[in-house]
Image (cartoon, rainbow, N blue to C red; front, side):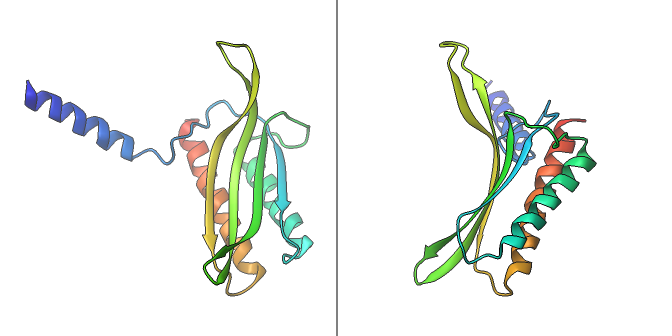
Length: 147
């Protein structure tokens, strides 16, 4: 019986390793894309390029982005201090309002979150590469969750 419990625990642990994130992206048909630059050290043109990437990737996934939605897919981009170095923090998050079952209160929750912190060496090109990688990870999980 003890061996059975160990096998059951190990199989549960191994199956959870294959999940990309603890978030589930099933049933997402639309969201409002947002790119927020919390720094003036990044050219505003990069904001539009990232927004265009989000819209293009969403169109390929079959997700509606043209109309306003209470659900938002947002890139938050800012500089942070890491010791004596300035690093760029890029986060991709999906937020939405949901109703709590017990209190019937509407709350804002993060349904997805992924991010990177890196020291940019070649300017804005690296920011676009990191944003594209985060979008690709999101898209891969979306496809997997919506098979």
